[in-house]
Image (cartoon, rainbow, N blue to C red):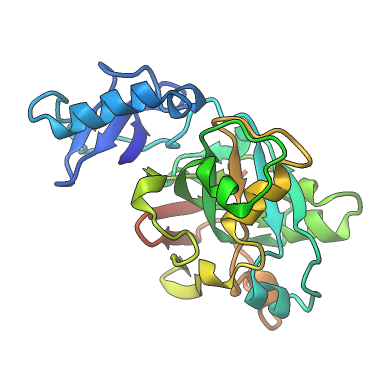
Length: 286
């Protein structure tokens, strides 16, 4: 299923994109797309049954309708740094022996086509297309990567916007360059795991002002999705509705020759993970 949330910011309602590409209203079936829904197999079965029954879910007019983040009430966003072989190479970094972790606050999340704000004084705002993993079952001390995959509810396209000066040059942790307002566009859809048979075979692409900047595949991940979930479950409990951003392939601005083409107000970024939908953001000054 392709689950999404539509409407004005803070007042989104649940919806579904059916097999014919028609937007359907889910608000009569479930109150929201969130961790509670993803953890409730019977509720998901009701959604599937309604989606398959003609005439049960009313169609929505998508004209002018904002698409919000596909997940509400996100618990935490755990991010994996330097998780692609080609990205580590362009950064001149050694392959990590274990996953590099940082966090993004849930309030960085915006819709896939919402405005991204360049922080005041920023000189090094960068782009990162990523595969986002959404947890559907509570995960503690998992033993295998297969168990890790079994705890995934679905996948989404994410944009891990980053301010490199704040992240790298200002001391402390990476989190300073990762948590600026609007720095995690998510969506348009949450695609349930049954529709993504192999999360390690997904092309990812990103364009800036129409120029292709990133063109990679999740096959390049150093730590694949199942292993990431397993690993994290030994350091924290993962709950339904938690999100994992799994890293970015090569092609970020930081890895380009001087002068590096960092983002500025007025730029347009478009990105996609194949099968998970496309995003488009216009950048403005904060």
